[in-house]
Image (cartoon, rainbow, N blue to C red):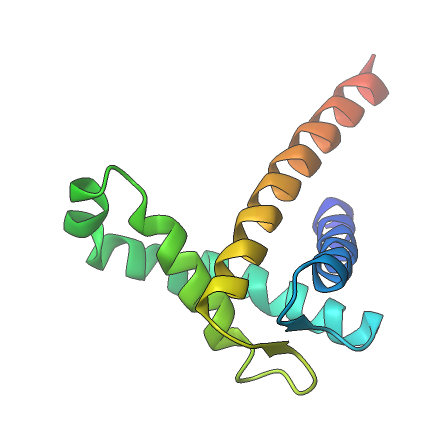
Length: 120
């Protein structure tokens, strides 16, 4: 539970950084970023796997590149449901999800290493 909360808070911070550096992404406050991070996590465990399964043939044909497009479309769609969260188009959404994917991977590795160092 603590790891999940930590992941949400760090994702919110990453979203604020992304909003600062990617033109077309607007997140006005940390509270909005927390809401987006929470909803992004919910979308990632509910809707994303279903859409991934439905679009599997396209993903295979594009050697996995369609999954980036699917992430960007979901991120863009999420902006329609969170007040204050603005994604001005597909390209900013794609840039943001690529950066968020890299940051999430780094976060996952860091949390895994910190867990192992605490156990030793």
